Image (cartoon, rainbow, N blue to C red; front, side, top):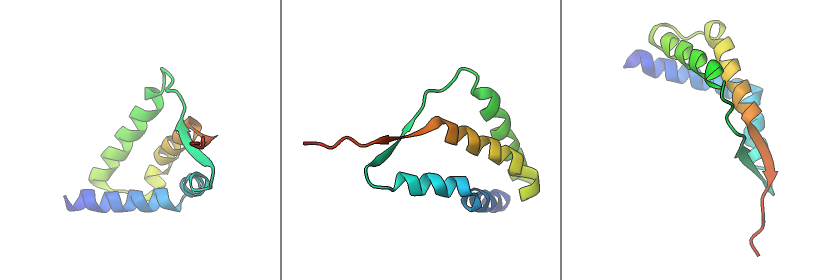
Length: 92
């Protein structure tokens, strides 16, 4: 359990230090804008499954930035590719 806690802490540090995560959060908080998810392509599991599996395996052993960065980058890029920013509709 302690190893998983340390791994979760390290993953949080890795994802929060990246500029992509903060860019999405700042853009999401801008007035008049909202996030919407794009459609999932049939081959999306080819990106998601290996990346999640690698991050899960490293979480049991050792999480270091140099080992997990490629897999975290693939997940973040895939997530950012699926997010689109749309204008909110006002309720009158």
